[in-house]
Image (cartoon, rainbow, N blue to C red; front, side, top):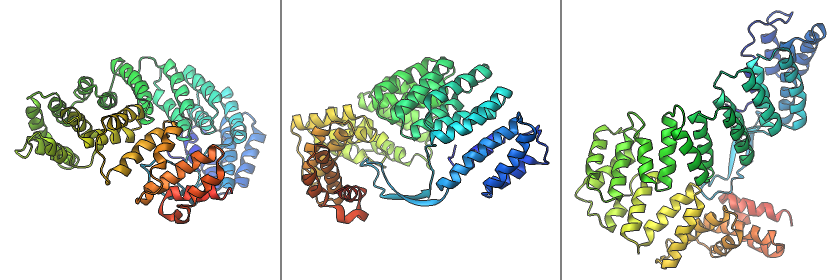
Length: 468
């Protein structure tokens, strides 16, 4: 669902079929007023209807819409604005965005309470208005009012006990997540699971959210429940495959992808897994894959399968490097895992595998590999020293291991790569700033702050200097 200034209007007018308002075509008339920005006139019209009939559900519902859209107008929602990129991830190089304001807005609780009071009056009069149930849930989720949301979800389930509304409910949990409240979203998801304990899809959605945040063990728990639960669909099988692939549980990964009918890639991944296991049947699997592969959507997979089956593949270290074709991280997971086993004294397999795990936020596993690289004293040349420490530092940083991360960032303060240098200055400077060493932090920030247009981290440093 898109967050825009007329979202709740369109949502709540869906079931406006047997309207009882005295004015002709009142719904269309008031909708036009609101969309034209004539909020005061719309309010006057609704007040007229409520004066004649204070218990008119549609008029009460529209008053909530008037209040909501008055707030959106005054807050400037929908206007095109330039905003900075607040995502600190090293994998997002964007400096700023041009987009409508109000995306993933957080509604003030005071506004939500005013609107909610009207909509809850509606539901006391006519509890079967599903559109208003949905609107109230959306309202409280965008205001981060977790307990009010849970109360409305319980009422929704009680009113429509035979309907499978778990995915609609899941939208409201994701509203919390998209507003930066991961823990709150998970709590609401678990609340929803209590209503639908045997539905595979909603368990899989929870697994996917944990997966996205790098909580791999939690993701494994919920996707396993989904796989064993009632009516698993292709999304469940796909999530089961993906999560177990990341965990190197290859037999389970195959069990998941094989359940997806007409999925060409099951032969591709079966081939790679058998190749990893040194099982000679890997060739048959990749040959079967190439017979079915889609030239439009699977170019990387086709290139890898074709290379592995060719005479160019000598199964040596150079062949491993040559097999990394197409740029898809997921396709490299098994190949790098095999190379770590086959070529244990080579740096690149460990580095590339850890890089992919860092990208997917599986920091505990990635940090373990980075530590193995240093324990084995695998060679780092001048070209990969910065990139290696950059990834390692970020894995530590985003795992809240700030002291260890600081040691790595310090190594990169004079990197010739400005993006890496600016990131190091920002994170190390922030580390010092938070320790109370502000003057030292400001000196670090100044190393890059004048080039704010070249890197989001340089912009962050400039913003810190404004506090001086």
